[in-house]
Length: 391
Figure 1 (cartoon, rainbow, N blue to C red):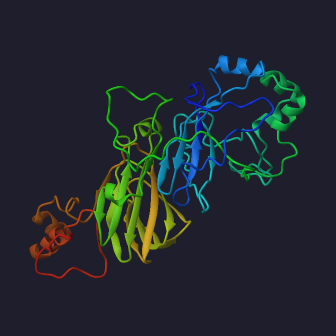
Figure 2 (cartoon, rainbow, N blue to C red; figure 1 turned 135 degrees about the vertical axis):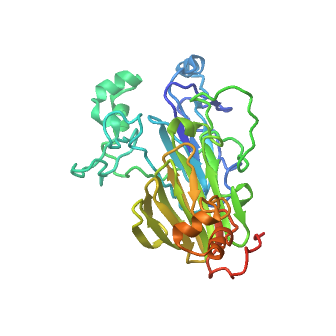
């Protein structure tokens, strides 16, 4: 994956020289990064403080070294945070399709025009078009350079008019996803380890050097993990500081059949849930106590959960996996049942009188569920006392 942050310098320099009129001296470039499935590369490149020395060599026919911004390996489970105005490209070097779920925060203070997204292409086109703005008729979407005259582009890039016309992709019907012809030899860093533990040096990250990617698919780094039930991992601004700027966070969940995520609500964020694998039965209750959703969700489906709405999830397939995007850099949840729930903090007498139940029944309500987040849903707990904690 490549990301271009305008105003930042190139940080990757090619070790080989491109000769005038010749192709890339690289081979297949498979020394790194061909591991795993559903992988890809993300790159960052910023056309800015160009190296005049290298460009001067090119004009003299001596060849030049390419420079570009950072290129990152991405894999299944990666969460990628992107600043507004940043250009991105993706290249799939794995042996499976690379599926990317994208969420835009239209209510962000950085979306200055209105609450409609307006992404545009730097290269390529979309013949079918896409309706980003409600009420606008669907029409083919061309790249942003297509709107300028070739003569203006030729002067801006200091190229001939014919090349400028090619930049406009006017006769290119491949769409915005293309197949690379020949070797793809972009400079690639070593594969990063999962969830790297980086030391803080006391200096703030800049927009040019900010880490933008983290992986949530490693159970050993999960916030909640039970071998027989599953795991839940969260990503907030403490893990990825750039999220403080974006005011977003994420959660990754994976639970086994009959496992349940205890009833909970987001205290300070809205959430969008996207199912990546399996099926689950989900109930959502609003602030009036009405059940506004009660049904199955499966792979590819999306569910919106507003702030303060309580939700419970129970896996009905062998494995249920999902991702949640939340509109707060440090989203907080409150649970209705379990060891850290709101009911656990109430006196027995309050529970007894509030629900018109006996003190013994209140004790069961308060203490029978000793888990904090994940529990079994195969049946009610046996009465007679609190259950022992699962491993």
